[in-house]
Length: 219
Image 1: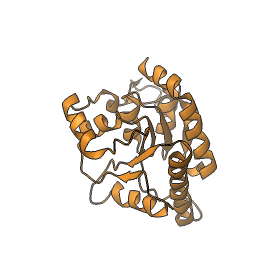
Image 2 (image 1 turned 30 degrees about the vertical axis):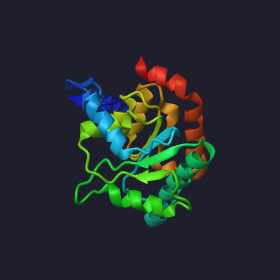
Image 3 (image 1 turned 180 degrees about the horizontal axis):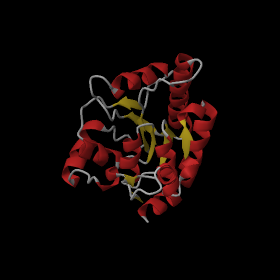
Image 4 (image 1 turned 90 degrees about the vertical axis):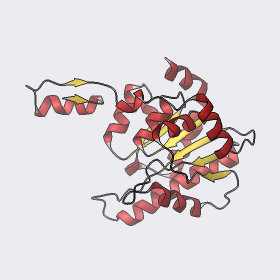
């Protein structure tokens, strides 16, 4: 049995101590980007080229199961993401790209990305990429961002394995576990503890430490 991070490995050791099990990396880290020429074509077609640093953002719908008021908590989560985007634009001088990772009929990140857009007071320097890109194209595009902030775990993995410093919003413990394995646990936060001031603080800290984080990711 192969697991992707330490907390799952420890749980498996407790519940199935006689099983043959090992810890490995998530397969998403192995996915190659599309060819450089294709990445450049995507960049020319989808990015603004406004000489501002770029922040990629991945959001997903989340129903907060077990929460006493899931609808209110969902609004709280989307509001926190929107306020962090506004902060990135106004105070960090960034251009923001909302990039849907999953576009299946029953689970569509595009609709929740549009909800975040609707919460923004000013959508200048904020762009929604609404095209259906395959995983290698997504990874190539993520590699063009200066920072990334994501809820989708594999969006974060694509960004991290492209050397892009990332704030990970964890809807399951595996996300925090993978960030800890990379030595970046301080930049992960549970979606259930999320609020705008905390998310903005994490983004500010990542922005300040970005060169060191890039070096760590390269290693």
